[in-house]
Image 1 (cartoon, one colour):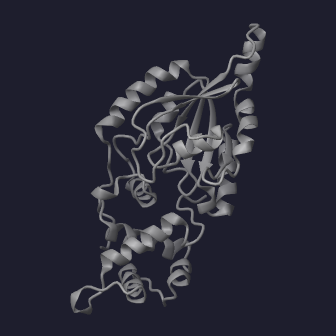
Image 2 (spheres, rainbow, N blue to C red):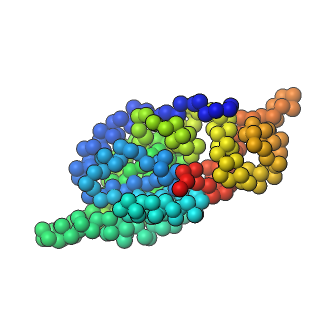
Image 3 (spheres, helix red, strand yellow):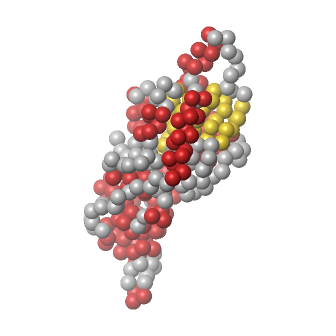
Length: 284
């Protein structure tokens, strides 16, 4: 564990089918609502969505904003605003920011609504497609927005396998879609970031390697969070930090050797749950 040599990639067969279906469904859509993970707003943007959503109104939601660095949240909102994309930060689990979405939809779909009025079309609901990478929280968002259990949820990627139409009210219909990645990551840092937040199936990854890479990043941009969480001295060497965490958390193998894998699992769980603090990996 020294350099990041893992090839992060995960593109199961159902994603190919999902992309084909989305290309068909986009013809019915007025608005593309793209959920991003606020901790990695750039890495969690599927480049295929831009080509798929051409000539459609766009709304970007920075989900899990409660887990991200608030200063970076504001910078990313400004980033999208400067690109002419309506963007909000939300936390679907506690419904923070959900009430603001109705107005954001009206702003994003202003041209479509005015076009309907000119044609004499009244009260036709906006049809929106909800898209995003696996495990970004699309189903949790839809349930929070709908105020009911309208979509299946889970804390691992791949829960939604098919499309679901959900009528929220007289003015808006949502099409839930499966989480999709893209066939090849040109930048392996993007693949690493996706792996760290849980958007790539953990079963095909090495938890110790991921913890090692996470510590390298945190040592650079959030140098005090690991020491603060585990009350350790810290080190510039990630493996030494992993050994220290194993020691203070009692992660031992036979012969009193440190259980690095177990310590790594603790570090990864604490990062993903926000116990390490509010952390943004894609920084402006």
